[in-house]
Image (cartoon, rainbow over all chains, first blue to last red):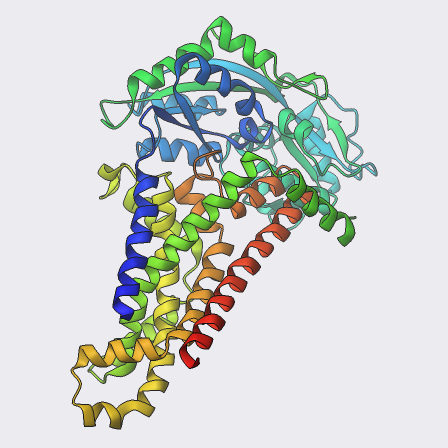
Length: 273
Length: 235
């Protein structure tokens, strides 16, 4: 009798599972970053694309490093990230077909109002980082090989500072996403380098403010790539390319530009630029 | 920073302004976890019963293994299932990555050792009492396992609930294999993680309260079921 119970349990479980597996076929998976997801950009533009084409876009939002690795495994049709050098390498190694600029915004350094390193208002990011290192003011880094982390490491490199040597002291690697790092950083009174979109959308700012902004070196470019269908036959090349074409079209670019939060535009389209 | 009152108010607010998005997330959470627990019971109950009721060479090792696997980190299970289901992995052809099915598979792996190890303990204790009866009836091994599982059914409900608790609360595995895709694989725990990373701490906590409420409903339902079954049995 118990076995009959087990059998019905199993059938129920399988029924659950099968309905799950029968998901509709008309969708693509986009490997993307937390900044585009957490800011709400995708929720703003994807319904427009879906209304037009009937193609559902499923976004997996992880750090750029992980997104690229997932795409290398063929676990996605389109890659939409922000680390130009890594993206070009991805294409050069044959994992993706072409790369196009989509949009940009910029990075900023946020800091506590007491400003222990005295960098508030600076526009030279390298000088600001140098001062943070000199005063050994706490700095929270993503430490997760994301696009933002790569950008941050590039800037430390330009400042000639070996942050690895300071890791665990004033330089603290959270090894997590942008939001988690902002939560940790604001909690410990640390400076944090973040993309502006995530910061504007972030709900736990406390008394933190933008300390450093406006340096050309803080430019943050987003790019889009179709995962190579020759290497991964499962890639939905046609639907993926339609999405890319739409994002790069006047209509897609206008959709990106129209996404505002607190009256501020978060991403600036620059396809074909 | 936040008062408990604010959080409870937000949680009630969530319930009052219940929308399709929230239903979707709650239903998917239940669907994934209940399926995983059912599958885990299907494997774990007989497995645990066999290990509990019989002496065989290597029994100690199997017990040790089951007990150790109770501590499987969800992230490790998630990674393992990801590597299996990835398009670069051996089962990539199934196209299950980033689907609820993948989440069910991961949670099943997570919960099965818990069900099996606890079942083993329950059955072992019960078997001690039944040994002579079984001998006098001359029951086959299969019939013994079935009889033990049936007679221990109420204790085993608690075992299933322990598995449910583990599965419904984990985030590490479902995040990796599900991808936390809006409207597709987003469940309660991944939503809580997402809202935390957006800095919406109060909303995240309110969702946590809601998740606990959900677990309470499931537990209450099982207890009621059990009570009415017991009444029926002795009526």
